[in-house]
Amino acid sequence: MSRVGAWVRHPFWQAVLLLILAYLLFKFGIALLPPLLGMHSAPVPTSVVVQYMLIALVGVLIHVSSDETRWRRFKEPIHDTMVDADKRWVRLAVLILVPLLIGWVTYDQTRPKVEAPITLRSIHPAPPSQITFRGKTIQLTGLENPLRHRGSLTEHIETGKRIYYQNCLACHGDRLDGQGHFAHGFSPTPLSFADQGTIAQLTESFVFWRVAKGGPGLPREGAPWSSAMPVWEDYLTEDEIWAVIIYLYEQSGWKPRTWEESTGGGEH
Image (tube, rainbow, N blue to C red; front, top):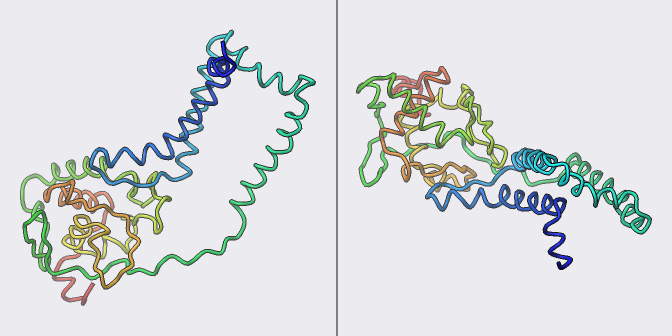
């Protein structure tokens, strides 16, 4: 048996290889999957990768320790490195490099960094008077949510909840606070719907426009924009977007602005 073959069959090096493959999958593989399914891709935050790697490490340790023979072979390289006289230089290198690596990571995370400020942006850009949604012209001015006057509001809320958890949760979070798993991978982070300065100040037609057209649909005169919002009209129907808007307001406890308020209070 070749030396490389022996390494590949050894539990310790199998565990190392599995952890490397797991890191590559979590760091790069997850981001490649959504485009294959016709969905919007987003970078995986480092904090999420660390969490997944800890889970993978626990799983690998459980596997190698489930059999006494495999567990004993797994510990052999560690034991030999720490005890054998011919490996004293390896021990010395480990004792020097590991603390240096930990120290550098700690320093890099805590040191003051001079970075360019986040691009100034308008949180609520002026909406167009009308948009085209899948070839259909929709007049936004004066538009109310049609689902509030059609069908069961309870059913619309349940539909909106399902759509939110399938498509929006990873960024906007379970509490609608903009703290989803992927939130910290964006700059600026996703909006918090729990904040009274967001949807509480908007008409539902404005929210429809922002959801349907996403970041690429923001007005050119206000560029550059940093919004990572996908163009959801490519994935959701008109009624599905209206339903998720109803869910956002019901779940957050806010009431949408009406066009009477908007007219009386000036431009928003």
